[in-house]
Image (tube, rainbow, N blue to C red; front, top):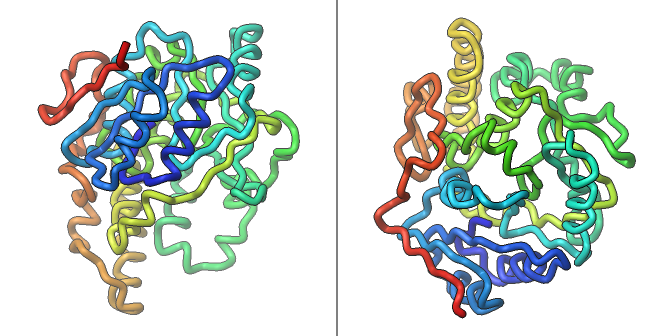
Length: 321
């Protein structure tokens, strides 16, 4: 679990994890919180292990810090600090299923709001058309937005009242086998906040794997509790992450087309709507902007496994005996 000023919700989230019947080891990576949530989480249980960073390193880097340490675990649960597991046996049930189905590599549950409303947080992996439409100028063309291809991207054509195979669940709460992490690698830190799960699922698909969806695994998700604090930088970080994703996974010509549509959409918002744009159109074209840290946009900047000691400002707090 990564935490950045998660407040009482992060404490409730961590409590729902440590109270699971399977008793997982909870690692919390605190990204420079100043609201007292790190201390409050630490006080939940003496068995919680915490890494405190001096600044916000982002979701990808925070998860990577623990993934490098999890080589002896059989399963790894990546969970947001705004997620509550209301059923104390939910992880146990999913692990039991994994134990009897070794072909299953990763799984997710039914995301729902605090009042029980289903959250559509499942997608196919984006095609060039999807990127040009949902992140580019195509979003202003209603006939494309309403097309069957876009509906398929949102998995609207799948019956999610039943177990299903998915290409990309949101990474708010997903369970993975450790050996799958060894195969896919760590999260790509050039996507510190957005698109790190999309990139990971892209590489997951390259292994020939899907994600198994369990409709009876209830996951209460308070959406955007951290990213809502990004203000005007939210849309910009999302946009430039899409550019970096296109540059990494598509041919140069296709990526250039995607980037052009994204820049045109940004120009439309900036000059027609007067939206605040804290970066130049050239920076958006290059994908240079990052809300947290400078990005590396090499063709494959995926972090190597287990060769990084972590940031110098990192403090690891071991559980008390």
